[in-house]
Each structure stands twice: as C-alpha cells, then as structure tokens.
Length: 620
Image (cartoon, rainbow, N blue to C red; front, side, top):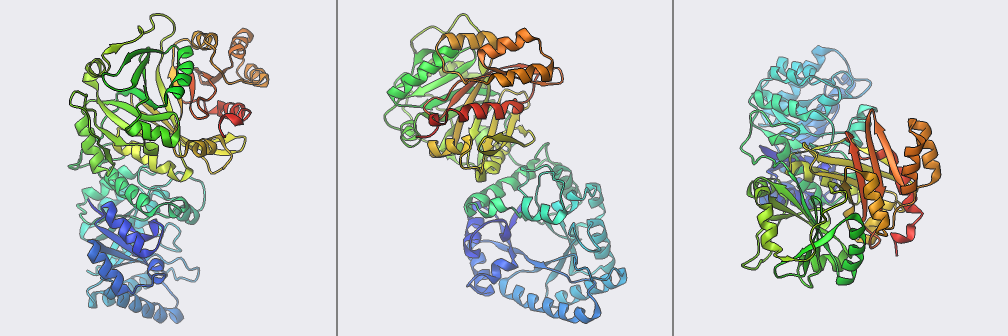
C-alpha cells in the first residue's frame, strides 16, 4: 500500500506537519492550500523540503466551485485555476483535487458540467498536470461518486480522473459494489476516513467527526476491497477533519494515521481481499498477569486489599524483590525492586499497574505485527538465568508483555521458584474479567486504535457515562472469546473521576481491575469479612431496582446488605461489587456474569456518584 496523508489532518505549521508525516513512515502528503498560504516558505521551498524528506506531493487541494458556474463567473474561475496550476508547478504536485460545486447558483445542466470539466482537463494536460474530480456528499448537483464517475467517463480526457473519498460515499450509503464500474487508470487518488454513525448534516459530520480507519463505524472493509478488485495501485491517503486531532501532537496523530492505513490494508473487521503480505493480528488468549510497581510500604497496603479478595502470596522471584499473588486463575505480581522500569514507574506514578501480560500463541508473530504497526518495542537487559518475555509499550508508558501461552506454567515455575503460602484451596475462585484504563480524552481514539491494530479484538459501541462532575466517554475492546477485555475511558470534564485519576496518577493508566466469580454473594462476603473497604451504595438505588426489574425482595435485600449492583439485558444478568480505591488510584471490582455481555453501564452513574462522595480518596 502506498501511504499518504493530507496536511489538514494534523496540527502545527506546514513544515512541522511534513516532518511528522515523514517520521511516521508515510510516502507522500497532500498539501492543503490553507497550510501553504499560511507558511512563510514559498511553494518552491515547500516542494524542496518534501523532496528532502522523501515525500511525494500526492495532491494539491482543494479547488472549489469549478464546474457549472454562470457565464459571468466562468472565466474568473478558469483564471483562478491557472494560478493554481502555476503554484503546483512550483510545489512539484501533478494532481489537483477539484471537489463538486456547492454554490447555490451553480448550473445543473449536465452538458455544461461536461464542458467545464473537459476545459479544466485540457488546460491541465497542456502543463502535464491532472485534475481529480471528487463528489462531495453535500455537493449542489453532484454528491454521489457514481455521478462523478459518469462525468469523468464521458469527458474521457487523459488529464481528468476520479478521486474517491470513503466518507463522501459511505456517509450517503452509496453501495461499494458500484466501484466495480470504475476503470482503474481513471482513479487518480483514494482518500480514506472513518467516522462514527451520527444523525447530522453531512458537512458538519465531515468537518468535525472524521477519524482514522478502525476508530469509527463506516464499512471500510467492503469499500477498500472493491477498490483493490479493480486493480487500483495508487496512493491511499488519509483526509481527516477532527477537532480532537487538530489539538493533538502532530507526531502522535501522524503515527496513528500510518497505523490506521496498515490496519485497513490487512482488514479492519475481517481479512482484506486479496490478503496482503502483512503480519496478521494475534488472538489474545488471556491475561496471564497484572504487575504492580510499589514500594514496600505500598506493597503492604496493596496486600491488605488483595487478601480479602482471596489472593495469597504464593512465590517469590528467583532473584528480584517481586512476589506472585494468586487467586483462582488470576495472577497479580507486586514488584518492589529499587531499580529498573518498575521502580521508575512507581517514582513517577506511585503504586500502580506498570505491566500486563497477554497470552498469545506466538509472541514473535505478535512482535512482527507490532513492528508493522509502528508500535514501540521495549527491550531491557535481563540476567542470563531470567525467562525472556518480549514486550511493547502500552498505555501511559506501561508495558504489554507477550507471553507464550504454551509455556506459561514453565515460565512461572522458572521465574518464581521460592514458595511462600499455598494457593487457596477453598472459597469462590476468581478469574480476570476486564481491565479499565483511563486516559486523557485526546488520547482515547489513539489507544483504541492501538489495541485493534495489534490484536484480533473487536470494539463495542461508545457510551457516554454521567459522572456527577461531567460526562465520561467509554468504549471496550474485546477478544472474540471474551478472555481479554479492556474498557477505555476519558473525559473532558476536569473534575470528573476519570480526569482526577489522570491528574493524581500523573498520566494514563489502569484505574480499576474487575475479577469474575461464579458466586458474587460468597465472594463479597469473603471480602467484607476480610475487612475490605467497599463502596457504599444508597438505599434509593435498591428501592428503584426492585420496582424496575420486579426482583424478589429478599434478593434485593441480599444485594443491599453487601452493596452489590445489578443490571439486566433480556434474561442475562450482571452483579457488581466495588472496593474503595487503593493508594487513591486503583480499585477492584467483583462481577458475576449470567450470560451478560456488557459492563453494567447503567450502574456507572451510581458507582461514580458513590466514589465522588469519597473525593479525598482520589486527590491530595
């Protein structure tokens, strides 16, 4: 895949944008006219900079309101086009994007549209330039790529071709099968953008809510496959209008853009056709462990929360100040080393999750995928007798270890040979259900893309959760078997629990860990008897619960006595029990799923309000 991105997609000066685009690995860039007009460098100097950076100028854009202008404006329109041709010559751009006319006084006569496009092509051809015509979803008379292709086809000039933009076609639900009618040599450029499904006018939707492939809801796989089938071999270029991206880091957005195109190349929700030579996504088979960085004092406080949940310290590391805690299938590692990444993590963030181990069938294949997606590996020196586990950088500078599923028992036996206490033999067993990660709102889509581009994971629909101090955006990514689930959370409200966590934590990270059990009441009773500090739920909640679901009064009383929350989806049921926060950061949840696939979003405002009543727990 030949990769390109429009400079309008990222923030900064034109020079900084081009440098970020080149550093991210793109082969080309579309130069947006406003970026050029605001640059102190001349078009010739910008062209020289692009060549120095190894970037092709894939497109100069946009030229607006060309075809169908009334007679008194037509000559001025073509004079303006000639000026842009001069600029393109200095810039080193061969193609210009001409988008369909949006002016209310534009003429609808097809003959006039054909004549104007033919005139533009003839003028471009004399300069060895080309005109790419694009149907805007809100165009005055041409708003469908089928109509745009009909005009390009009928003009039949070598300097006139079509530009396809995924947003303009898919927002209007134009069938992707219609792309099969386009001759590949007449398709000059493919522009790519995803978007969430929104019920609003096309212009506002496009200008503010476009996002990277994989971050939205458009059926890009079918669209991209249709383009490949006709034999298109040109650039695939991102054109993203998004207020969040314009406020973000140019290098970060450019890297996400490159990653999203590689994701599209291999297929977002299913393998691309034909299948490209690209490492496939690894299936995450489970969370093998969660590692906390902590001082000795913090480790004691953490232990006081883990023991009531049924965890016991079962073994010590062969050579490091690291302890393995077990409960059922769940493993927590507490790292108290005084040097290395965990120590640095604790110094910066305080006691917190510094690493997560994901079991995969082939760690090296997962690393190859990470390399293809420009995901940073993490490498550090290990002792000759240590078990080597590859890792990549994750949320908030933490690590994701890629653990070979077939050798996990051997890994634990090798790395933790010094026994401490026997694993619990009785009581409700736990397994990991999901991990909630909280981040800056501006990073939300970036980390969503990280997970779905690295692993074979699906995303759930976004939801907005009402915190007493503002809205929180939340979305989950899940493996097909449900063994690995991450919920991602971010908020623009500075006093929301999510925002306060990020402030107190000094960055993004794991805010809560949910463990699954088969008997929520027994697990909650064990935690309460062990002295865990639990989240208090108001009596009003239970009165409403009984009325809303028609639950038996004795069941509601049992839940109220233990501060257990409840949700239902059809006949599927979900029970939740929350602890207070450890070290003003991380809290734990116990859940029981009875064929329930969600995360209890209906209860989130109740939980957040309860946590808000303990605000001193989360800020200094």
